[in-house]
Length: 344
Image 1 (cartoon, rainbow, N blue to C red):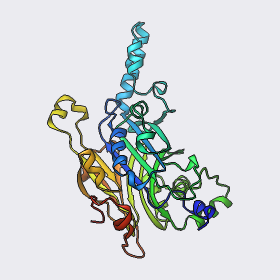
Image 2 (cartoon, rainbow, N blue to C red; image 1 turned 120 degrees about the horizontal axis):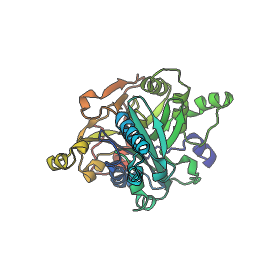
Image 3 (cartoon, rainbow, N blue to C red; image 1 turned 90 degrees about the vertical axis):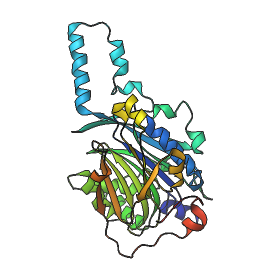
Image 4 (cartoon, one colour; image 1 turned 180 degrees about the horizontal axis):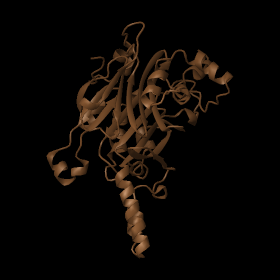
């Protein structure tokens, strides 16, 4: 296949790795999301060596933030001189965070996004200076597969982060959208501008154009238009999504990191379990996570960021399937590590 045709059809590459972690622990005191994602991607480095990226979200209680703001305003009215300490400890001052941290608002939570991505291996992209700046307990990551004819286009490096009318969306995708060209032509005729040559960007355009009222409805409507292979991790200001196509072409698994009793004693606010999602279970082995189950073909797991504590509260939706389950045989013979448990 010629380079131009291949790149325009599939900038995401069928063989990539995704990893994500979602936590109910609030605030910058729990900055483990990016660190755990780093190790999760490192364990899956065999699935992609061209580039790597991590998107982390700091999530705070809106009530707690409002209380701190009022406390500071009252201190200013009283003429308190020792305001420096309060300024430096405030969790929502964008100036404290590098890489253009984005501040967002919602009814229940307030989130700030931190993104870093570049060409190279995971260990090269994320240095000891960069990783600590990716704050927050929720994160998604991606490694991209390098093939002959790769064009080294930085715009194709994932995760993607965009802003639309309902806030921010971050996306990491492993797979190949087979009807990408058909849908893209319709968008281009309507005047839509594409920032990359990746088929993954199409998913973001579909969500932004949806007229549904809630983000879960927008996501479900958009996914129902897609054909092909897609294992997707998506994070917004209010939700975390783990998605697998109805055919089950690519693997996706769910695990949990349980906090120890000592952790709960030392930090009661940061003692909730952390739920992880990965292309391969070998990522769970490295970070000490326990495998819960496989994300089923056609399943869309939706987790509200203000209610992460119990997996019984996670919502599970279903995408309609046309052709039955057909996992990719190359996962067994070429893609997956020998110590990974895939496809059940």
